[in-house]
Amino acid sequence: MTASPALGTTLQPATQAFLQHAPKQLLIGGEWMAAASGATFDTINPATGRPLVSVALAGDADVDQAVQAARRALEAGPWPSLSGAERGNLLWKTAELIEQHADELAELETLDNGKPLRAARHGDLPMAVRHFRYYAGWAGKLEGATIPVAHPDQFVYTLREPMGVVGLIIPWNFPLLMAAWKLAPALACGNTTVLKPAEETPLTALRLGELLAEVGFPPGVVNIVTGPGVPTGAALAAHMGVDKIAFTGSTEVGRKVMAAAAAGNLKRVSLELGGKSPNVVFADADLDKAIKGATWAVFSTSGQECVAGSRLFVEEAVYQPVLDGLAAQAQRIRVGPGFAPKAHIGPIVSDKQLQTIMGYIESGRSGGAQIVAGGERLGGELASGYFLQPTVFAHQDDSLRLVQEEIFGPVVAVTSFKDWDELIARANRTRYGLAAGAWTKDVSKAHRFARAVKAGTVWINAYGLFDAAAPFGGYKESGFGREMGREALDLYTQTKTVWVSL
Ligand code: NAD
Image (cartoon, rainbow, N blue to C red; front, side):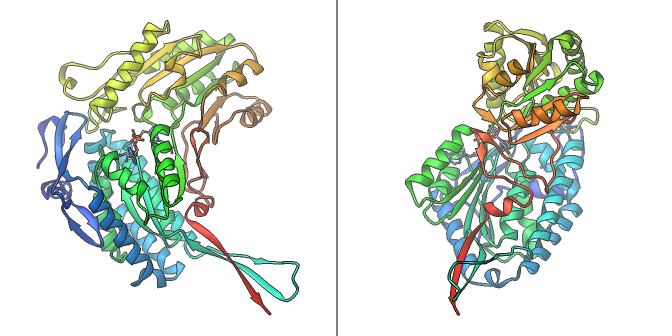
C-alpha cells in the first residue's frame, strides 16, 4: 500500500514496506505467524474511514501458544540467566532503535490512530524512548532487604523476583507509548510478556515487535497477539498460565479482567482505568494561562485521554470571561487529518467512538446543558473521516450523564462554583479519581486543593504532564497500582523471604 492522496503525504519507504507486507502476523516464540484459524481483521484509517491493512485475529489457540512461548522463555533459555545489567542493556538498545525509527513509527501511529504527526513524533515517540531508558536504569537495581528478626540464630533476607508470565492489555489512544509503559518495567524486572494492543491500533506494537528481535531479546520474551477484546483480550485475561495482567482501558472492561482473574488462577491484576477529571479555575488565577491550559487539558488528542480535564469548575467571579475565552479557543482549534501540517487535533479513533461521543452531546443538549462552542461532526472534505468539533457545554447540573460519565472525546462541561466546600464536594462527586487540575496564584490554596481532591495525579497551573519517573494511577474506580516511577517495579515483581539458620 502506498500513500493515498487523501493522506496528503508521501510515506517513508519503511512505512510503505511495513504496510505492504500484509496481513500483519502474530509474534509468538520469536516467529511471525498467521492466526491458527486464518482469521484477520482490518485496521481502519480514522482520517479517511478506509481500511489500512489487515491483521491476524488471535483466538484462544493463538493466545495459548503465546502464553506457552512466554512460559518457556521464562523458565529456560538465555532470559532467566541474564543479569539485571544485561536486561538493562537490551532496554537501552530498544530506546536507541525506537529513536532511529521514530519517523516511521510516528507515521504508523498517525495512520492508525489519527493523531497529528507532530504529536506522535514529538510527543508519543520521545516519551516511549524515555520509558525504555528510565527502566533500563532500574533493571540492575532491584534490591531486596536484610530483615532483623526476633530469632538471633536466623538470617532473613528478601529477593525481588519477577511475577512470571505477564499479559499486557492496552488501549488505542497512545498505542506505542502504552506498550512502552508496560513492556519497559515488565522486562526490566525479568518477566516474559504477551502484549495485546487495541484492535483499533495494532500497528506500532507490531513494528516494535520487529525492532525488539533486532535488539536481541530472546524468542518468547515478548509475544504479540492482535485482535478484539473478545476473543483475544478475554482469552489472555482468563488464561491459567498467565501470572499477572496489567490492563489499561475502560472501567467496564477492567471489571471483566478482574472477574476473570478471580474466577481463574487469581493472577495478579493492575488496572489503569477511566476518568472524569475536575479542572478548577480560581478567581485569582492568571486567566490567560488558565484558559489556554483548560483548553488543552480537554482537547488534546481530541479529548481521547484518560486524564482529560472534562469537568471544568470556574469560580463565579471569573466564570463568564473564562467560559467565553474557552469557547473562543475551542473555535480556533484546527481539526484535520493527522498528516495536515496545520492540524492541531485529528479525528476520533473510530466510527463507533464518534457515535458514542455524539450520543453524549445529544444527551447534554436534551438534558438542558447549553452548547457554547462546537457540537457538530465535520463534513465537506472531512466527511469520510471521524472528525468532530471541539465542544464546550455550560451547565449547573452535576447529575447529567455529560458530567458524570467518561466521554473520551473533545467535550468539556463547564460550571461555576461559589465557595471552597461546594467546590471540593462537587469535584469529588464522581466514581472516578484519576487526575485533577487547579489554576491559582495562591500557593497554599493550591496545596490544600491537592490534598482535598481524590485523584491519583494533581497538576497545579499545568495539566497533562507525564514523565517515566513520576508514578501515575487512579483513586476509586479509576483503578489501582501505579505505573511509572519506582512504584511500577512493585507491579512486576514479587517478594520472596528467605530464612537461613546460622
Ligand atoms: P477498552 O476498555 O474498550 O479496551 C482496552 C483494551 O481492552 C483493548 O485492547 C481491548 O481490546 C481490550 N478488551 C476489551 N474487552 C476485553 C475483555 N473482555 N477482556 C480483556 N480485554 C478486553 O478501552 P479503549 O476504548 O481501548 O480505551 C479507552 C479507555 O481506556 C478509556 O476508559 C480511558 O480512560 C482508558 N484509559 C486509561 C488510561 C489510564 O492510564 N488510566 C490510559 C489510557 C486510556
